Length: 113
Image 1 (cartoon, helix red, strand yellow):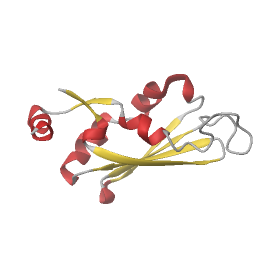
Image 2 (image 1 turned 180 degrees about the vertical axis):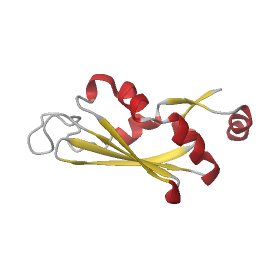
Image 3 (image 1 turned 90 degrees about the vertical axis):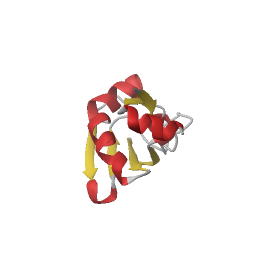
Image 4 (image 1 turned 60 degrees about the vertical axis):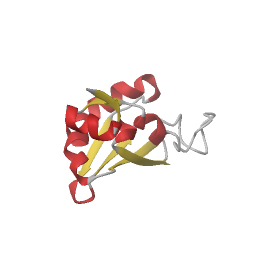
């Protein structure tokens, strides 16, 4: 069953130059393996499409039930150079949480209850 990532995680984002940084943290430790399986660097790159010009790197933090993504070339040159509305990447976390992922039926049922 497909659900939005926001049902399993919360996120924060920011910037460093032209790179957006997005941390995704599981709401429950038991959700982390699902998130780690479904939210790959390739899927994140596909989710953002043309917004991310460069590579997407993924870092696993299993002790925190979290993933961290670096979205290279996502900020139009960075905060001081960009004409983008969100030149510091603050909304990338919200956008990533809108991604749909596959979850087992028992998890989908638990979330719907």
